[in-house]
Length: 110
Image (cartoon, rainbow, N blue to C red; front, side, top):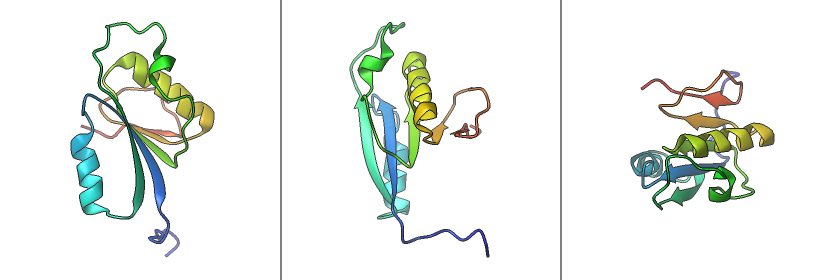
């Protein structure tokens, strides 16, 4: 019984998406876990060049989260987000990406 989940606490989840890439997952969280998560969605909807010289300009300078979900498609943005999460020691779940192993990073299988 040591692995019980505390269903009374609400976790703060920040979702980063690009052009609606996380909408289905966000809808699923809201449908199947209502009230369990405080969701903040950060959307980048503008067209982006193939290479971003300053990806930090596209992401908020600060954010607070218990968990970050990465649905960013642009590799420069995803890399910057990973760097920020590692610095802040915020766990990051990044789908369909390949990153070096890290205790704060999860890349679920496709």
